[in-house]
Image (cartoon, rainbow, N blue to C red; front, side, top):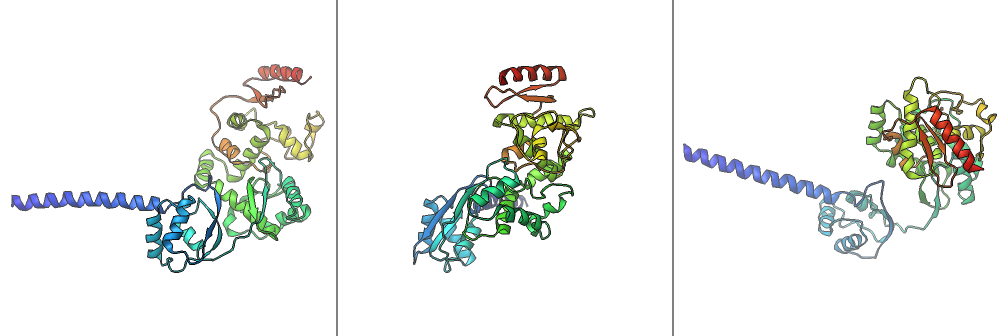
Length: 354
């Protein structure tokens, strides 16, 4: 009886040991099947697959170019999925954020990738500025693009269902959602396709974790993008974004300080950027004027980049309620917790300006 019991114990230990090994092996394989880099930080590369290349040769090319983690896993997975006899020669544009399945599916196409038009949308551009940039690049007329942005809301692709939550009263519904980045597109691309390229990038950058974080904070996605756009326009140096975000968060949470008083929102309402706003500018009757209307404006005032979105989601832990630009060429601001401090810093900034 004891002998049988001992054998059972040994068998259990062996089974547990091999179970752990199998689990670790599974984790390792999944890791090797995963992309080389994340969707937030990736490279695009032109990969040439010569005619009559074997799966082993293709694997070697992809490994050398940094597109896959392991040649053997690529070959085994290709055979397991039945792709090894159908990979095509061609010139491809691949991303390091693609997993093995996506790479193998792309290599079925046998395309000759044709170099397209490259353009950059800077962080903080408004929709009108984006439209003007696209016209300058010869991609689409400014007014035609703006019209296409309006029309898009009548036929939203299901992939971008978050757009259905945009409230009425915004100047441009897609403002803030055309993500600022460098793009390469084919010649002859339509305005709608351009819109979807930039919306797709926004969807990649604003992750599910970000959506959960916004919900935990009591904000909608639209409200976070709106706040991030204000941070993007107000901040001039990267390290101040979370601090400026904190000022606006603190005001939104303070019963007696619901006016954000952001000059950037006034400039958006005016439709122009003035070096210095006059008192009469602060009185423009617009829901985007946060000197007159409390809380957040109806929608974003520009396209925020990833850092501004992150600052809106993770503000600095400070109790500041005010900030004013130093006017000393540093791009930084004076921050304060009381109106008395703020007025003192405003006087200093005025002296530096003159």
